[in-house]
Length: 136
Image (cartoon, rainbow, N blue to C red):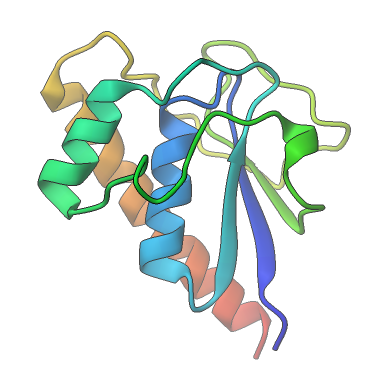
């Protein structure tokens, strides 16, 4: 079975989409390839996201080579997921397969980050199950 390529998209590709890429690699890498991208980039991944992913999950996004990327920098994808359009909805040249509608925790408390992380973790596992079932 050829693994599907899943892209997690938000405007700046610095926080929610980066966490989704990391969770995708760690929790569902046996089922799909994870990418993240945005319509704009930031000089670095959100440092609160980096710190909390490392502390809570043992995932070091920067050490694993994650960085802010534009949509044209990732391979052609099979599934496109918007992290939420509350900041602005990125245009990627096609419709999104799903919009997770997640609040952007940037600049908020660690508790806000943890809430978003838990939701991303849950949705990654749901997506993994859905893809597995569709391939049966």
